[in-house]
Length: 303
Length: 172
Image 1: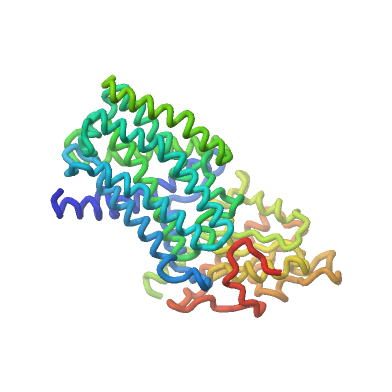
Image 2: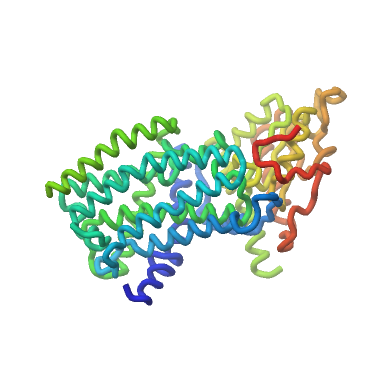
């Protein structure tokens, strides 16, 4: 990958300049749709932007023993990893990937969850620690099918390069099963109902981010919102069956389908209630892992 | 006022996050308060979000006459809310102690412990009244000076240096 292209991917599209406004739009769509599904009017269009600015302008009461680098370093690391992962997405057919970028993507996808776990434990709040423990347990639950599905895709494409994987996705039964598995892992990765177990609003305060306020919370919110763009974008960029070759059209298609997927996730979240962590693990290990194994078997048999 | 200050004031006006604290209330105000978030009143139109952690909140809504049991909790949580903050006394109890006035179990009214910005009258107040009070609190919140950079919590109340206490742990 050329240096200039990498910087464009990291900072412009699908990196920071695209992902930050898109994440605000996506979160607004989520909150607005949730309100409409509940018969409310919901927040105005600019809500996530003003939330972010307001949080940046607040001054936090000091917490001895939990100040300094940890507070802002962890969310910044998460944001950096998400932007790096976004830059690897094969949005355009000719996207300048490199051999083995799937492995880098898998590593970068794990960093935000790790940062959240560390932040929860570092905050020394019992609610932060409970939330961090839940995130750690759940990551065991969803990573097994998630990684198996990626392995199935890479087997089907006979490559570790995302551009080539995007080329074969949707062309056979195995790859379709793998795409369904990836999509099924999104609600738990985004802490959405029925898997909103990590932050569990009102039950354990807000989990790992309970002790964060002001600018640090703004960074966490941003990381979480960027995760929306990244994870929906990952599924969409792999699942889109065709590319036009004209980059504005491809970019618009990518954005619109991502928004549609976010709307579908919101519908699921609004229609369901939170389940217990044991039930969530059972669901992922028994059903979704089974699905991903079927995908892997189908990919190996080239069905 | 430069551009950034205007932007911050706009952002505060449009994004008030509430924290609801029951300081010994009978639950009447609490139910009416939650009604504001229901489809009929839908406070989220104003950008209101009910936050679970006081460290995320801007506006502290206190209901109840502040019993001796909850006094320390009120001080702890007040000091955990990040500056600038606004305190709303929800209902008659935090304003006057209501029917509990004179009881030896009461540390209130609320203004004895922490500075109160808005009083919402009623026992319990109707949701419309609460919404009007929240709108007033939002005005006060947006007009508060943006705290100078590097300056931390402007005011320690109650003499209790309680910042090291994590959320959810109340030292009595």
